[in-house]
Length: 331
Image 1 (cartoon, rainbow, N blue to C red):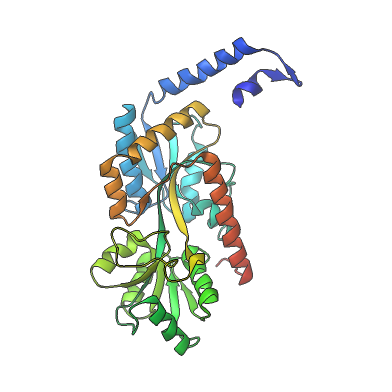
Image 2 (cartoon, rainbow, N blue to C red):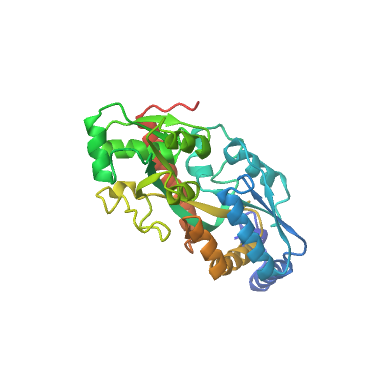
């Protein structure tokens, strides 16, 4: 801990119990004084994006919990790198935070040469919301469930495509996994974002897509897309009729992504702990849980920082192995 490092030099302890107590008391005082001014929450999503909406719900809740203004600042672009660099350039004092998806560490390093280390320069403090992807298709496809879809694809080898919101990301690699697990041969078509891909699926130009539930949900409810399966561990309350891949015999496709609250690791630990506790209280409020559910997501789990870090490394390693198997090269 920082307190211990402060009181050692050349391998010899300089001060003992009293000094340690003073240090911890100082850390407690820092946490209690924070926040003494407005706190900025930077998000990589554009206004109205899923992470942006979550950040605004969090900001409102933290303002009520901690008695200070929390302001959301949208910095989209660069696969999230612009938002991260903005946070890194600010003082590391707990007054500039980050809301971003776990893919900044598990996926983006395979797509772009980052000017920061997503495993060491930023630190996840709390999981805000989590959710899987949904396999959606054009409603005119001659298949109404996943087994029928698999049979249809097998009957039309190498002629069925699937879209994703970006090459090299989870929507791409989930299709690769379904190919392997189901013994089919779909071809991938990468887009720059969900909206153009969804338009082409609805227009019949590409029959299928792996997409996030938040962007697909309104179109599924409107009957403009048909949902075959979700990759979350359980069925979604907002789509109770859609089975999980695990139910259908594909447990290897039980995968979720999460959006979290992050900070730089050198923000005082006492402030980090206060943020974690306040965030957990915000996520327990019915209004926030309802808002998260409306997006087709689940409220984040109360994981420790070590658990969050471990999940990032596991997702990064899995994604890397899948992309290496197809000799993926970023566009």
